[in-house]
Length: 260
Image (cartoon, rainbow, N blue to C red):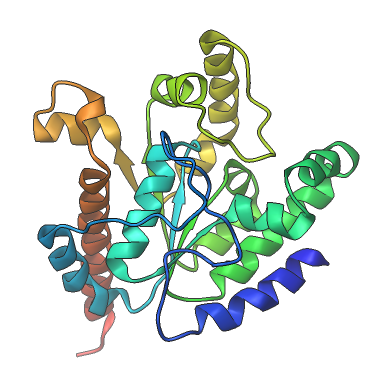
């Protein structure tokens, strides 16, 4: 299977001593207002660097899986999170597309063998979840299968909750590139309707995540007048704080379970 072959190529790369933000032979998905194929570079603030350094020892290379409706906010957050932690970044949809031969091949595969395509998604998550020091931007298909949800339990799962109307605007106005498995197009209202259907199919899976980072909550907490004011760094800093909280709770539970 091509997915297994690709996974075998990923293992030596992830085992390299100097993590990069993304696998070099896979192109990062185009970000909003940025269609470059090169690796996205981030200028990390001192606050972000310090928080990442604080939690890294307790994290011990645990993988982080970001779920939620596909958007530039989610993918940007995943890439900056990887950069801050000095982790590798992978987009599971991109890995599947690479393994199956590109976007056109994926669309054809879905029409002729949907189960086979879903099995490919599971195989990718199986391989990635067995590694360490990864931030994985998981596609919507990842949360629609019990086996996939179980695989993500090997790490920490985080729901990046972005309002659907913002995502619809990204797709219509900013030409945000969706994975081949999602054929969303049309006017703003049509795109919003399609996104809502995906959300309803995936919501129960999103809800199984270990924690939720909601854009609206961050904007409210920081006193922003609009949701657009929330930066990628705001999202990642909040994510790091939540991961720190989860790791602290886990540590307390482990200590409480120790015999006297």
